[in-house]
Length: 464
Ligand code: ARG
Image (cartoon, rainbow, N blue to C red; front, side, top):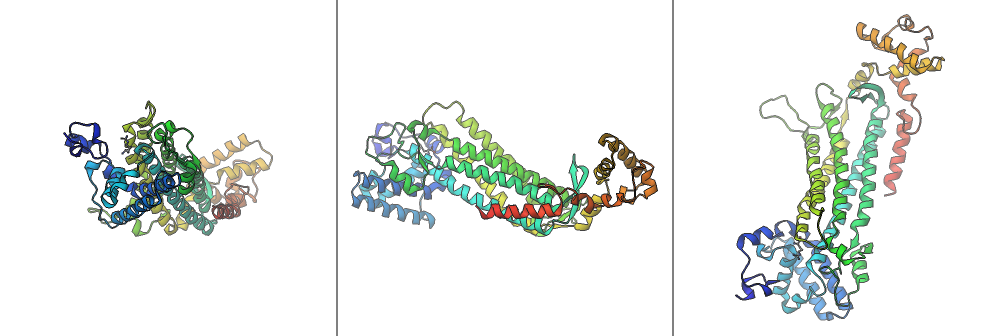
């Protein structure tokens, strides 16, 4: 049987066409076509380099660049006929190029293999995705800083074990999320360095016999370094795993953030109001306004953790160099990047619209003995050992529970039942403002520290 009846790119040594189901089963074009722009960018650069290396004539290079540019236009206009029998994005574009410009199109693949081509494409694509994601992180952080600045003085209960612990500034709580996102940003910036290394020139696995000049393609594609080993170049997917690990941490942070928003919008907490445009209703219960965006983001974290586990498992035990297994890297990676980007986008849109219910938060902080530690610290300042103070305040709290009074609501006589060291200056430390203002050091919840942290945060974002 002639090669025409098999695949036109590699059919030469085959004597029968690939089984129709196997062709579909092994094809990746349905999902890797989204790499088209980076594939074309890589091919134009490769052709440019081949001309400088004397492998292509200037006319051939120009015909290739012209053809690829037109193909990009066809794809973007939705006029490109993606063919499953051509397997993947690379062979679809190359076949179309040959259709358009004839035999010169077949020269594009000189000194290259799909193995280094696909590794190059994914890295170029992921580099762009990381840049978009970094922008969304910054936008979300800007929203948090603005809210924290506006609400530095708003007091809410801080929790441990989800039990009221100590009063904190709402702005301070928002800035905890800011810190997490700063680490996520750092991790992705760091990950980008290892994404941005060039496998192109590794060819199939061993390099190529043509006089390629990898410095040229490296510079033109904006890579930071040339991969130092061709076997590693075609088979390394660490960068994708590393991205999914960083993305997993970011999604884990967003899921914690989500969980608090879900709690806080519930009737039981009622701490914040989420604008209607970020919620949906129930088809049966007319009173419902569900915090869908945070719930969905909380749930979507699972997809990204799954991508990380999937890619680790994909790579585990693979011998050098390229194996077809690697084609399975794309869907999890694409999904992880899409999920993180969209989740960040939803949060960046939503955070500036959050409205704290200041009185409800304040009332919750007033209840629940949130200033008990302040009373203990007060007694320490009067000269008692901390453990005894803890015990004394424990008795006062027990009394408060049985009488339904918070510490600040007790009279001086009531408080003095527990220690005669208590005098009427105690009420200053039992107020919410007294409590937060007393935590006046870097990283503490005093409103002036929150404002200082906002200023540091603005500097951090401005330096990006
Ligand atoms: N579609 C393939 C992938 O995603 C491209 C590389 C194929 N190389 C090969 N020798 N079959 O990995």
